[in-house]
Amino acid sequence: MPEGVRGTAPSAPQMQARPPIDKLSVRRAAELLEKYKSGKAKLEARIVENEQFWKLKQWETHKKDNTAGRPSATAVLWNCIASKHADFMDGYPSPNVLPRMADDEEEAKLLSDVIPCVLRQGGFREAYDECSLEKLKQGCGIYGVFWDPDLHGGIGDIVYKSIDPLMLFWEPGKTDLQKSSNVFLCDLVDNETLKNQYPDILKDKTLSLDKNVSKYIYEDSVDTSNMSLVVDWYYKKRIGGQDVLHFAKFVGDTLLYSTENAGLPYLYAHGRYPFEPDTLHRIKGTWFGFGYIDIGKGDQTIIDELSECIVKNTKWGVKPRYLSKMGGGINEKEFADLSREIVHFEGQSTDIKPVDYKPLQGNYLAFMESKIALLKECTGNRDVNNGGTVSGVTAASGIAAMQESGSKLSRDAISGTYHAFEKVIYLTIELMREKYDSKRYFRITGDSGQAEYIEYTNALLRGQDQTVAGGTSVGLRRPEFDIIVTAEKASPYKKIERNELMMSLYGMGILQPQNAPAAMQLLSLMDFEGKERIMAKVAENGTLNDRLLQYQQLALDLATEYDPALAEEIAMAIESGMPRESAPTLKSSGKSSAESRLERVRDEAQERSQPG
Image (cartoon, rainbow, N blue to C red; front, top):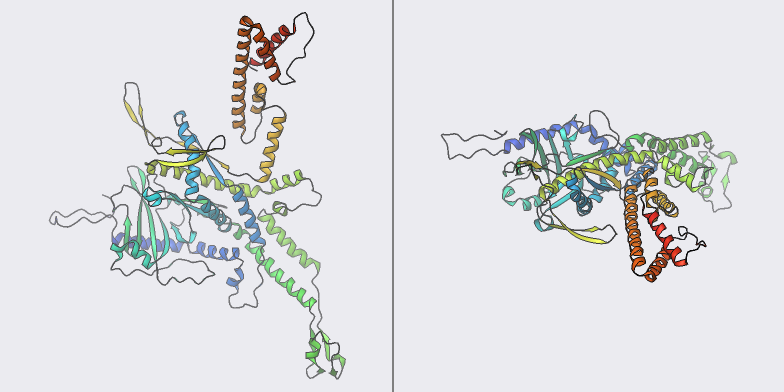
């Protein structure tokens, strides 16, 4: 019997069975949520502090009551993160779906075309933008992959969200989010909005104003006095040897919805929490990790303080100060007015004298520069990565090589994001397998770059009946796929490098149809992105060329036998279409020019039609 369900007493048949999720279950879930919050308190404090560093407002937190003593925040660390984020956007991922069985090749090709449309319509680019920034700032970005049944007029579709780490709660000590017994996603919602969404349930309810969640330090004044904490509760049950995902939504101790109470066997058939974390630098005991602000905020604090001292010293040097004797005869008002040429005084001229000023020595400036260089080095944000040059390096190839070498940390971080993206795509395919029953229409880009309009359903994604000899069914086979992730838009340097490679191959004659055998041998020994597509095209052109030569030879043979004059015309046409370097030079012989031409064309066609 499932947990929380009680049977009906035989003596009281009029009593209704207790629902799987009742008020007591909700209260227990709320207590569990409080326990998860306590285990996450240190992480939340770090997240809030890091967000202040990102906004260049860290000194407002450290020195709340001493406005005059706050150093000015410099943007060295901010620039490091912004540069890394630009690398992430240049490496925006694109999925390539590959089949694991030959029977699924057509479906894999359709998915490779359709899934980018699903990602675009579901807002994945915005989620990728926010999650990659959170990954760099806080150490982890969290993708949410949900099914929204209200989209497209009630047909429903997949949506992608960037999850706020302050609003997500999980079992402390777990290094894998999927192994948490429960996961809670919280949100503050206006009370009137809640009552409009659930009028029957909340009609006579006094909504809970429990808002015990950490909040960022906002620039605006956010009024939460009329908001309630709404909790999305995801939990797993072990049924039939596998984990089944269920869902409940509640506010206070009032249940708003439950998949179990609705009689559903699960929330999603794939059985996973709809959250996929993308961790930057991993640490023991948790899956969240730490980011570049955690690495650089110590050096950034020192840089800010040194910068403030240097600014103050410079101001003292630009605008000197003076000591004036108490009761002296100096007219201080006239003395401070720089426009006056004469200053009146009584007494001794020594009654006022300048304050000694000691300019900073070069070692202080060098120390601050070393801290800036250390921060850039630790975050992998050297000047050359941002378009700067190094002394002695002026060649474009040298600069490009240094940029390629200096972007190792970015490539490593992006490769981790690609792993998370693979999991997001698997969740997408599973939701399509479960929910895409109705026909949907997509505009895709064809092989030649033209727009194509296709319809798609999950008919081939669902289990396929397998039969053996004699027509006996041995069960259903679910198509499975592998995901290869590539950058949708490579960096400008990659584009230039690839374009130059294509031009070089073209200049070598690799793409000439008559050179297909030699070209295939050469390409098989090379390694570059997109090689398979070029080899397929070269092979296709070579096959078409071989067929053309065979047809030309057949036409010559037939024309020679039945119409020699026509054979002469065909030979001249074939010869005029041959590349100049492949056309043999006409040599004098005892044969007529027509006979020589026919023989030469036959030999050329025969030679080129042979496999290389």
